[in-house]
Image (tube, rainbow, N blue to C red; front, side, top):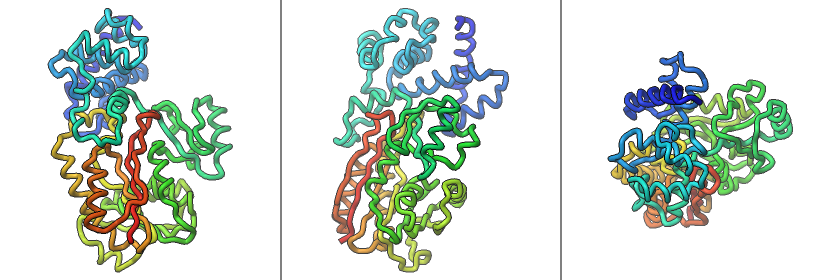
Length: 388
């Protein structure tokens, strides 16, 4: 690519960074930006996105460096043999083919970059997180993961092969592929699969529902884990709830595509006592995918590293305990509460579990971090607690 073209794209990147005020997710902002600048071709849009996201992956590192230098750091760390270095830092081009660890070592010796400064919340990390591996993962874009619906496996694979879409088969119904693979543009695949992160899929190992049981997904959002539960055990009597009706409408559409029709849905605000709505109903299992910092997913949304503030961790801890206590009265004795977050912070995970043990008498059967940073995936926390 010519230097003139690269410089033109850099001007577009400057416009993006000047205009972005963290009011919307970066992905939504970028979509709106490109709609307003339709003169940009697809290659330019891809190139601009390909350096804007790495720029935010630097988090709080090298705050005094110029934007040009930080863009060069991002290009070196997050791209392989980046063309941007030819105009930003030509002297660094000989390093661009090295490993991530080698690039980090080079920058720490030859610039103001420090890996530990990328993520300013390291003191809040759980001991279950390997800090160095987690920090390096923030520099890498995660993969796209899908789960194929039961009975659609071979048809899905055949169609992907016909289309020349590259994938890695992780399990009979689980695939990974490069982020940005345009599956949503292939209408013939609609209803064949669910987009769901690998670690999110692994939470299903903790459900262990039995035929005919009654389960409640208390913060269902768009319903990914509910679909997983119903595909594991189709005869489960399922209640899904969320505080947002618009989210539940999206859930309805997603359930319909997945071929799931047997379920109930309710709008429930768990910051308040839900007794008027649930009327003493009892469940054989409750999934609480609690609102959280999302820190285990920040490699997908790197702008959050710069936006998030320490005080929010305590706010989420308070909310998570409150929501859990509101669900426990509706859980049958001897049955599981599945507590899930996509956070790497101890206060949102182990501290909440300890609180539920002490205050609600729940017994931990199993809990773990699903360390997606080893698999180009999100990192989640999941605990299976039993009500005695």
